[in-house]
Length: 322
Image (cartoon, rainbow, N blue to C red; front, top):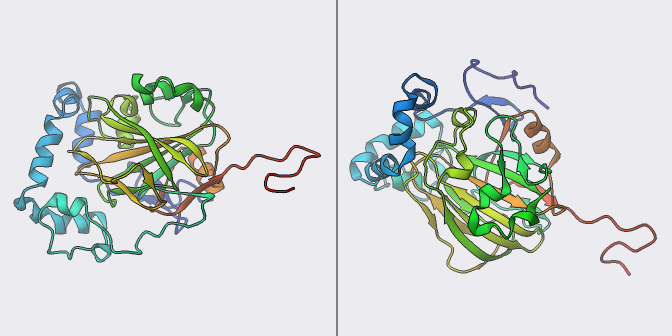
């Protein structure tokens, strides 16, 4: 496993583990100066509420990103963030607006999902952190603000909170460089959905390290999914600064692994998946990197966990045997 200092260009950036190459890389952050001004400068008391306490700033950014004038930012952003436009269905000069580019669709086959139903796949291109076992109902991040399952699900999901105690959780952080459509990680069907939250803080680690309750106060949508191989799962889409909308696109409650679930409009965002105890076993490399306080760069469709099959009782046949 690579050491966190193995490939850093300086000591001030966000370091992440690139799962495919095995290298430690520095994340390219869009609007880094604004984040530091808002969260780490003397001006932060003046900027916090107008930027993050209401939807106004995010809505204004969303309005601009929907205009034809915003197309002029596509080429420079793609270059700055290293986005491969050859993956897209729409040609580089064919986007109607920056948001059209941001919510881009990919050509078939660009994000294949592992077909094995006992394998859980990443729902999105993201920086992934996993917690194999929660401490009771509480997630205690290595960096950032702790939060409970009850806070995450809100009052509407209070009846479900206890069932996730001592369960497993993963956080999939999307940044502006990522493909912003997300997919179902396994076969199943949806049983409930609700909306929560009223703030729009950034999900960048700079904000999380300031002990801001991002995941339990930001606008978010909670879907309860009954996954065939993984049981009852909370799939939570968290909006963030600049996210003008969380849009659900799947037309029916039943879904197959890899089906598109929805997309985030312009901005950073996060998906949290919460599992009941004894249902998933996260891949060892992801758990090891997460234990070091570092995120792992993964793509939609990549395997991230397997179904945690119960061990047979001594003297009794394993499940499926006679």
